Length: 532
Image (tube, rainbow, N blue to C red; front, side, top):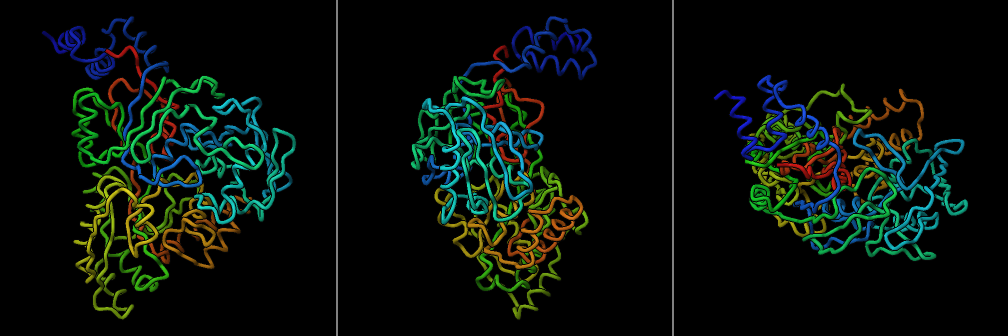
């Protein structure tokens, strides 16, 4: 029996599915021998199909999770909000901005005043039509002293004025060429309002309706039959599960108890992909790992100490051992090669324990003893990274004590509270958004409490600058300043890695701006209902 005949027999007897059969036939150069009926059937299977109940696991949940978009506490609720709520705009799989609840948006004479026009007859899950007051009241909740992740963005708006039920005019305190991008954030999801009272109980205008929600544990959603966007929302329903244990997620996939799992450990991804019925995929992304310090506090208020810590980490070794090469090196700033104004002229910082020790001595120290807190609830390998870092830093006279923290409550009890801790960012689609939210003096999410006047001035100037070359020069300079002054070790950019059952399908392009296809996976993906 030839190899191709054996392949055909395996397919007929059900030991392999149709897709595997055709892929292997192509590898053998025997695709021409495959019956044309099967090829036509495969093409049909590649088209989105309706139906099925999706079961998907993530690790990033917390007991502090809630349904109010101004209280972002984990990736789990971020995913849920992008599934059940809608925003004025969205970032597509190619990284481009598109209108969502807004039908259009345009500057009015300059980048400091914008008009947004809403789509007609869009309904919330409770049947209320989305109007301009819903938008204004929803955005107001992120202004002032709000805990919202987008407070710094919302506070640049000095006036919001409705022009009828379908138009809103935003006046800003300065120009912002990227202003429409900000409204793609889940924290600025649009909620139904009655006067000035906003319903934050989970009623949105998104592709799916929330059926049940248990903070830090699970959520069940069902398809919104009145969703305004065509050609999406293929699953009948979905169950989102928080499963912190990596072995439990792996077993769930192998035993067909799960359809998709995120946060796959890069070191075991290839092995998992060899399991029957399981596929592993990774997507290059803007996601990056950081070790932010509380910059105003000793010893981190001395830039010599910061530089010592940045030079005492072997990024290449961590990329190889923690991510198995599925990512790229960080250079102590948060802008990735996927961003428009990435500074490709900055030299890559390398491991140099001798120079790290020199900086330590410039700070008047013979050695340094510090704790670094992490949790594997952040991402697979977070704690292992701190252990590896400690081994590397010892050669520079830096004694790092890794401290393991529980996943639950990490973002409220450790992040921005501990003197030094691990963190991660999924990245943002524009340089202004990333720098403003994570590194500016305007932000309540400035995780290292960094305040560099030169950087902050450039940030505001670049935001309003419309000349491409001038703007590029400003962002290049900001990346250099961040690299050499910010009290954070930004060491890796990590691909998004997830595993699925073989009958799970997705469009050709998968977004890298957030994990889970830009947190739009439940809306964009589908089952191959004809999978053998």
